[in-house]
Image (cartoon, rainbow, N blue to C red; front, side):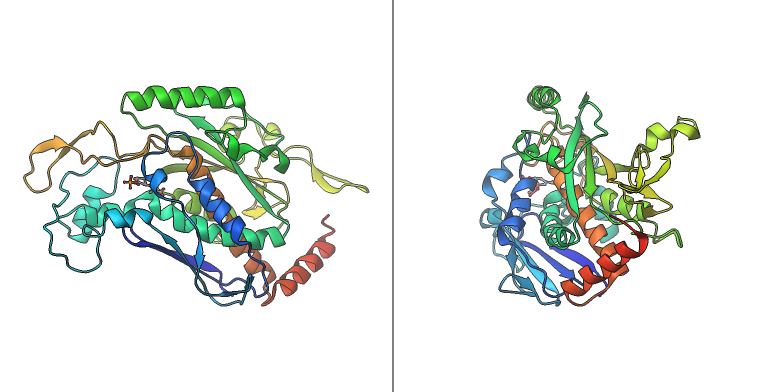
Length: 386
Ligand code: EPS
């Protein structure tokens, strides 16, 4: 019952694959809900031409029968529709055509170090796997994990909080329903005024051939206290979430709760006092900690923020050096996006779903979903959690 997932696939190869292992039997999957998450990842003002080619869908191949999991590994495919335009360049087998090599590494990408490490002369052998196209497979896996979390009473949402220098106002009081409609916003921002300025900023910088980074937040509602553990460094949930978030292409920072702000406050303004009443049970008035204390969920909404750098494939390339001639040259230029912050937030949701699904599997065990729900209910009764 060790929950885990992996992905395989190149950006312009035939497609992407994910295998998700360790879910209980009897969990209902909704095909439309899986594809909805795939479509959400394709959203956002500032995406490039590729998104007009792809319409990502999850093709389940194993582990599910008549809409319910069997408890066996679930294999899912996401086709690359663009492959038909790359058949020769990305064919798994030798081709007749002479395929030119890519020799101009892009600053900020995996190209240069990947060349050294994997002993390549064609940078395409590095960039195809380093590409953020791989996140489509993570979102497919995350959508499967989300179905399990939904059965656990958990809701995972996200919103964009900054694009380049444009920041949305801070919102501490968010409820799950506040996120309804966030996918209809062109940059998945909850504040219409900030959203309009973000769109404007993307348009201005895109014309200048610039790419843009930003920040987003993922909030999780309905978590039971006690996921993760204070017992050992590798079980602490803060670290597990940060690892999952920072593993997303281009993400350079992750934080929990009011992390950077709390660092400058006195302790009396940094922690969340504990209350209990007959009608509410255990509760807090504040959530500076972002739902984690001692490496464990404390029952408050989880808040994870992330910072993503501007995309490193530039339409006006930066200076680089040709790996064959060692002559100075401009970096390789490929079709690309201007910004992917709205999409990255959806990928962030997926990664957090995958980490939390693993936590629920660790804590509650069970081979059938009814066993898991039974164990969860018994735990809630024991700690008096409502
Ligand atoms: C990416 C470059 C672009 C993005 C791609 C990630 O692809 P292409 O070179 O085919 O235009 O569109 O992202 C996706 C395809 C996707 O599905 O998110 C890169 O270099 O990382």
